[in-house]
Image (cartoon, rainbow, N blue to C red):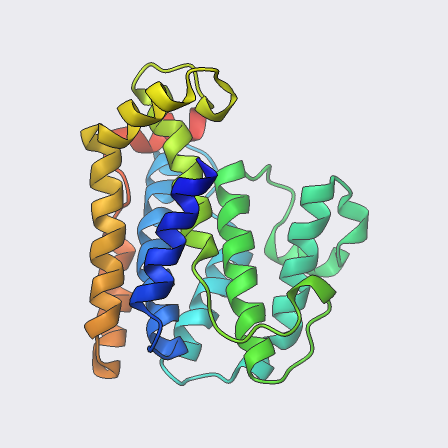
Length: 239
């Protein structure tokens, strides 16, 4: 599983080796918007609260930065606060998060693990942009980023890989199974997972050839595209 993810990461890094951070950021955003729309579909079908204001604000800032509407140093505080909330959630101690920020952007709604993955993804991209611009990054582990990376996409594929195992009737998460190779082969060859990977690859290829005058159109278009067929959106949140 780890080797497969790292192969994907190396392929993405290889394809974008000579590309600037605008194309790298666009690739992340195209895939992220698909993922978020699937989450939105699932939450709506289940009658649950929509995605947090903090997540959408983070993504909007990423798009604004891509389009040259905002400089990374302008969202430095937001990025650090969002990252602090994600860290507090991950370690299980909300009291360590900036409370006013949490109340404004996350609220008291119980967020799914799928949304927390997206929050972390957005926070990491924001902090990478802040670091590249020479701003202050509070988390020492995230200081010194030299370029936008693709770890968020890999993490998203990992969580969807487990879900596809469940949809296929496997005993996921399959990385805990002693039949790892057999189940992994089945999942990777299944049409549903292949469709996800194809969408991701297509979005990254789009980012490689896109011009800046297309960014606004992509921003609008991809909000209505999904990473999974709609019938799987609600079951994904139940997994």
